[in-house]
Amino acid sequence: MRFHEFYIGQVFKTKSLKLTKEDITRFAREFDPQYMHLDEEKALQGRFNGIIASGIQTLAVSFKLWVETGSYGDEVIAGTAMNNIKFIKPVYPGDELYTIVEVIGVKEMRNGTGLVTVLLSTFNNKEEQVFEGDLSVLVKQ
Image 1 (cartoon, helix red, strand yellow):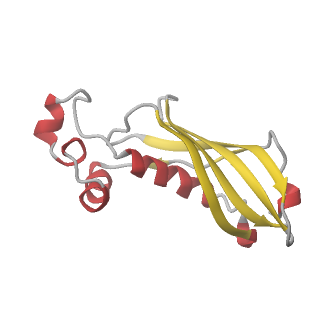
Image 2: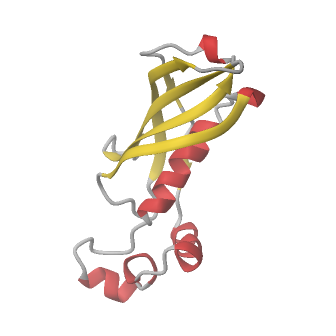
Image 3: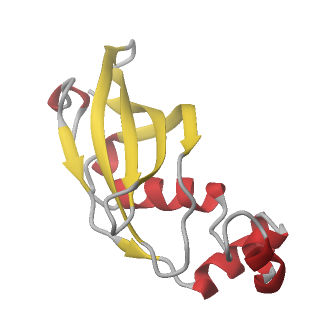
């Protein structure tokens, strides 16, 4: 979509993605090697009662699901900011995530571009919100 096709209040819903224990530990080994993502025994003794996904992985999955809707298409130029990031609830192996995306800002820029800001709100298969964050992207007009 081009910049002028986005409007405040517009809402999109992504497909869902199920995270397995293997997905969680593979991501954690490379990007967030903390015990609550890797060590099942120690994680069982912690506050989450088992392995959980990294918040960074939840953010990445939320972004992936949004991008895969194809809404930006080839009109996207670059991301410019992520703000108000909140990891609301832990994500466990077997959780299936989907994201509701709401356009919360549109600003015309120079050089034939516009800035689109969306609120990503990610939920698990129990309809519990697990993540929230704003994302701003530069898009062709």
